[in-house]
Image: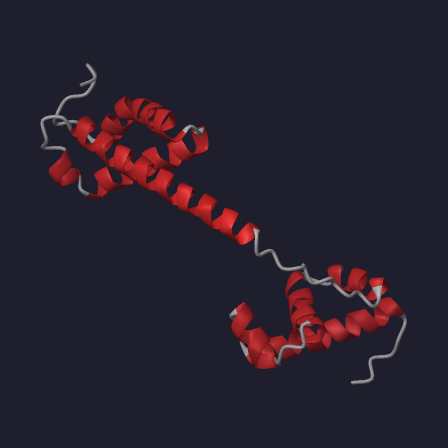
Amino acid sequence: MPADYAPASTFESFFAAEYEQVVGLAFVLCGRRVVAEEVAQDAFVQAYRRWSVVSGYDDPGAWVRRVAVNLATSNLRRRAREARALVRLAGRRSPVAELVVTDEAFCEAVRHLPKRQAQCVALHYLEDRSVADVAALLDIAAATVRVHLHQGRAALAAALGEEDDR
């Protein structure tokens, strides 16, 4: 137990005293600093949620380390499963559908629209989705999609030097 940690300390002092050591432990188990930090943070989140109980343990640091070890082990198992799945799927790789861009000027003009207008235009016209589908995908009202489509068509017509015939 660190010298600067007393059993009645606050969670903040516990965290400050233990964090780097727990990250180090997780790093040894995981092999990647970013993953180790995530594991340590998750372990401390669990300790924080149960601090009223954990703070009463003889060695709360041991508890948080056990949680970190368990999380690191779970992480390694998940990464191993993902690697096996990728190996299996690599053999079944289907040909990538080629993007058919009929008009580069149109695509460039869409990219210059405000973000939401560009999203609505691309989903509606390039993916041939209904207004209701676009609204559901973007989590906005169908009326809002129609407004974005109207404004997007007008902006595209102006950018491409054509008349908006709708």
